[in-house]
Amino acid sequence: MARAPRNGAPAWQLTMLAVQLDKKLGEFAVKASFASESGATVLFGPSGAGKTSIINMIAGLLSPDHGRIELDGEVLFDDKARINIPTARRHIGYVFQEGRLFPHLSVKRNLDYGRWMSGEAFDPTVFRHVVELLDIGHLLDRRPGKLSGGERQRVAVGRALLMRPRLLLMDEPLASLDAARKRDILPYLERLRDEARVPLIYVSHNAPEVRRIATRVVLLEAGTVVATGGLELLDAAQDDVLA
Amino acid sequence: MFELSPQDWTAVQLSLKVAAVSTAIALPFGIAIAMVLARKDFWGKSLLDGLVLLPLVLPPVVTGYLLLITFGRRAPVGAFLADHFGIVFSFRWTGAALACGVMAFPLMVRAIRLSIEAIDTRLEDAAATLGANPVWNFATVTLPLALPGIIAGAILAFTRALGEFGATITFVSNIPGETQTISAAIYTLTQVPNGDADALKLVIVAIIISLGALMMAEWLARRATARLHGN
Image (cartoon, rainbow over all chains, first blue to last red; front, side):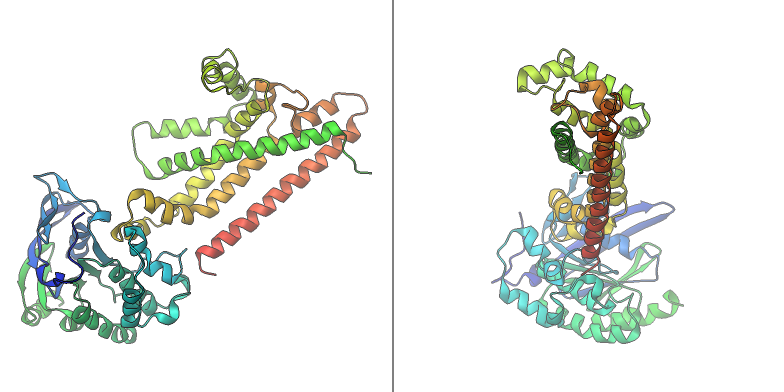
């Protein structure tokens, strides 16, 4: 199984995601092509622009009709070459909008799930580091049902991080939270971007949030990429996209 | 005062054995079929669905007769199993277990299928992104989340097997100590003069066992549900 190097050579510098795909979803069609490197690439656009469909295709939860998805030189999907690596073997972390923690497992076992599935030995140092980064040490013995929305999302981020992904997808991880909670969690996400060295694909339609997270912006409208670039895209886009 | 005759006591023990064995053996098949019916779409699915439910709607005598001409000592499947694996059903308690298992199967599958259909498949997607292949995904997410339904299905099947009469007596007859379960023993007692008092004792035993099983099902299901929602 091909995996990005974990230690030694910094994996984040090598990571390169190249996406070129199209997919018909009923009446709606997604047609996107973009590339991203280290840092946080934000897929920005109004609801219904196809952002979630695109990251689902990167994760392998949805198959494009045509196209090619490549990560670190490994082809994850290519319809012409008939390649479609199953989700479980892509090693791409995913933080869902609603957390999707396993209700029957404690927070600790939720966090440890990716390591458990990989069969690798438990690494207390890595575990403690992530738990401290997200400040969730006091929640470890609880069940997800007993967590607040903000706590749940922090655990979901930790769970995705602890599988040691070569790429981390986040689908509006703050959308279900109120403004105060958002302010609480954003610093954790910034720390994650700067310290965890995992490249990030971040889906959002919230411009202030994007401003804090993004190092690169992919602007989407009605399933199509309309522009890629830096944060300056937000200024132009904000008025017409979110009007 | 409340004493069972040795023969009645044998019938009670046999019933418990037959019901337990038939439930235990049917359970993996029940889970597999429920999973297929809940999650897969394929040609002939409604036929499979109908076949699984058939013992519920057929007269039990018909099911027993079908078992007899399939699994009897000289019947095609029965002869094959006897010659190659030494498994004999006809006029043995194993045959009673087979009949009970078949009769209880629809109830079991239905309960398990409903609980699988109630699972949020997005949790399985999440497990896949975390590296769980389909087998592990099933074992660590689907199965534990379906547990309340699996418990309910198993206990329903157990109580159904305890009460089975028609298919069993048609398939393997009514032999004391071998195929005579509580139901068959009660039936026999009602056919002999002065058997009513003994029949009543067995009826009371049957009520106690069934009620106990139902209460245990309720308790286990509530505990499993509580575990799922964090306690």
